[in-house]
Length: 243
Image 1 (cartoon, rainbow, N blue to C red):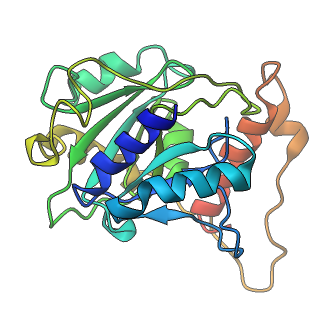
Image 2 (spheres, rainbow, N blue to C red):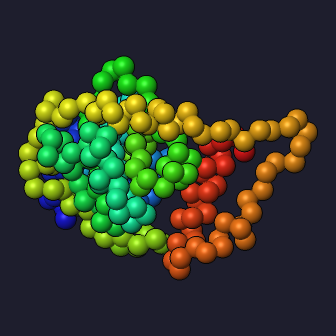
């Protein structure tokens, strides 16, 4: 894993795409020894040394993530196709102009979905809203702030399950450079903005008690093994709507 991790991180950072060091077999960031929450790299010359340091801190090979969106200093975004929650996500994405046959980076995720990467235009103004993805059940999320796990990571210790991340042949940072990547397709952007506009903020009343998470109602009928993810999505939805 060492060679692949280092070469991938080097390949990304030399194209001015910052990366983040993640905990072994998990998606969460590996804290720096000095206590900072995110251990990020944007200088290729520090990649190998940082990998060895992270491995000592974590007690094993760390996972790797790619930072996404201008807010994180990254010129790329990703479309997340979550086939675990919606097996038709790929078909819907095709209708929105998303295709793995384009000159895009394509990664198979640890749960069998896909991440498809695009180059961001400087005028890009879309925001991510976890409530939108949770409410419509499309299985499509636009990752424009934060990070995405990339190969050679393995998320086998995630509570909701996971496995190895793999680049699709011919669609990795080793096959295509950043300048090769197209911008996100216009139909996808229009759909995303329309979807965000349909989210109705939860009305608040001055002095009223804050809304509470109705755990029993949320968990009713939740499949075995999906409790944590369901609660997380629901809570994120509430927070995004101002609760």
